[in-house]
Image 1 (cartoon, rainbow, N blue to C red):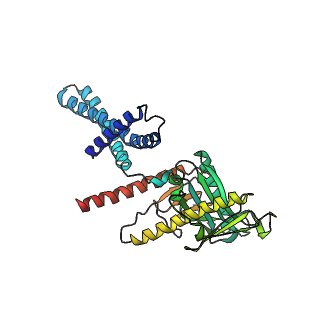
Image 2: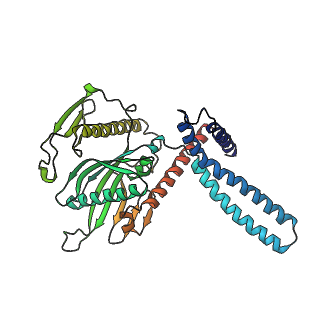
Length: 361
């Protein structure tokens, strides 16, 4: 690993030198170089601290072997213990940072929340999840834009689709895919009995036009009047847009904007994301003989998290993490969950890479 780290450190210094050249500053390659430089810095800076700790450890060992002073030996032993503990933490951090980043993590995200088992209670919880994600996005300076929504008379959502715009949006939200289970006493429950409902979340990376090409002859576009709860028309102009992709049979619709042009633009964005998802599902089926990475690949039907209101408990079943701070979580404070999932995902990927490396060594 040390040889690999030295190689990365040399590349980092070369990029630093490149970024200082007048012909590069402001040029077309500057953004690409600076992004790579920032990625490598996450590895090189801990590595430099590691080398400093190595020197500290060597110095403490020499002092312990050469001095006859009991007090000095005790101080050197204390310094050695602390430095070795710090080194172990740094080594783990560096090991995980060597896992290649998913290039899609920087993309915007498209998220669909759909009510499942539980009727009105499920739809109400779908609205609460949307609010939780809005709060979380706001904290991280990400913008949420509603693409499609089907509300219920009680203010819930049968289904809501939205985009999350900002650098790193997909990377922050991708672990939310799967079934979210809520256990609580509904407001309409007179006997005080706890009900269990489910909500399904799907998270897709937003893809660029160049990634998924949609031919004009492959789509059928229809316009209609947008509607509100109960199906009543809320707009006399046919501004809503529905798109059928004939080769795949996928249908998307958008009615959130007053402008037909904006609705069409959003519907095409949603269609690209779903075509990309369909393509990736087909690729995964072809590779089904390989071990599936457990975290970060949740199917829509896989139960990933439980929100138990009577016990003030949130449990993520993928990593067996339980937090007794449900009100804070519902206010968008989900960093502890997201960070733990990201760490488990990197560890899983690293184990996969190490297994593959041994197989070919």
